Length: 123
Image 1: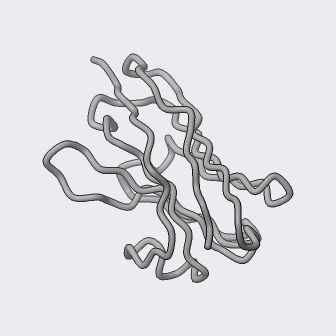
Image 2: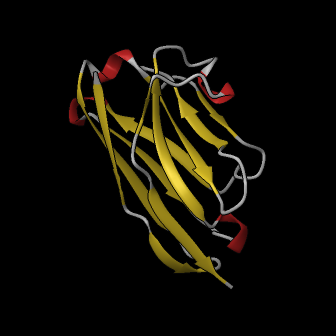
């Protein structure tokens, strides 16, 4: 079992930045690829970013490429999402996700989800 707890969400103006954190506990953190998904009101949950177990590989949705950066600190059991140049359309609940296989995580194959953190970008 892996428990995931997100933090760092909030209200920010368009063009601003936020850094989300996801702290993991339970099974070995380094054994999981990690990712971020988001869900806006009335929309389906969508993939945002993923990082492989050793951080050698990353993947991003086209909508966030060049603005968001995913990273991880395995000794601290934490994954981060640095979000820059935020837009109102980035407003959503952001979820941390874990799965052993990096390549299938972006397709929504997830073993564990966090509870989510709200990000609101005002225009």
